[in-house]
Structure formats: structure tokens, C-alpha cells
Amino acid sequence: MQLPKTFESLIKEATELDLYKKLVFQLNKDFLLANIDLDFHEEILPSSLKLLLHETVYKLIQEKFTEYLNLLYIIDVPEKQVKALNGEDILKLSEDVTFLILKREWQKVWFKNKYS
Image (cartoon, rainbow, N blue to C red; front, side):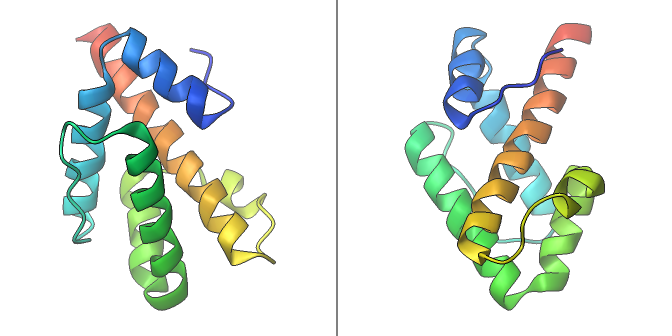
């Protein structure tokens, strides 16, 4: 599996494979497991999804760091990838982490679809 390099390519691939709704469902499932009050509507536009997810990650980093770490653990975002990010600008960091979250969730959805 070749992981997408950009948000746009990820959404394009998810849409082409008719897996976008499953991606949203997987995000909702993992956020619920992490006890974070965020529930995306299954018809949410990709741009809105990215914006809300980014905003939530930013707030978690700023205000609820333990919950943020728990979310990354539950989603299973590779620690090595998070540590490789530049943490000086929290806005940029939260944007990068948002993409890492989406990539990991996309991996889960893609593998479930391919091997189920």
C-alpha cells in the first residue's frame, strides 16, 4: 500500500474507492474510544472534515495534552512520525498531526476493505 502524500490525494483515493464514509466512520469510532466529543456527520465535506479535525487537534495540544496523547495512542499514529515533526509552531504541528491521523485512519479503512 502506497500512503497518500497530501490531504487532497488521500480524499481523492478514498472517494474513488467509495471509502470516504468509512473513513469518517473510523474517525468517529476512534474519537469515541478516546472519549473526545467529536462526531462527524457521514456526509461531511472533506474540507470541513479537515478543518474540524485540525481545530480539535490544536485545542487538544493546547488545553488537553493527555487526551491528545491518548487519541494518538488509540488511533495508533506512529510515535516516530510524531516526534519527527517540528513542534515550534503549534498551528503547523497540529496541521501535520491531523494529516498523520487521517493517514493512519485511511490505512485501517483500506486494509479492512481489501482483506475483509
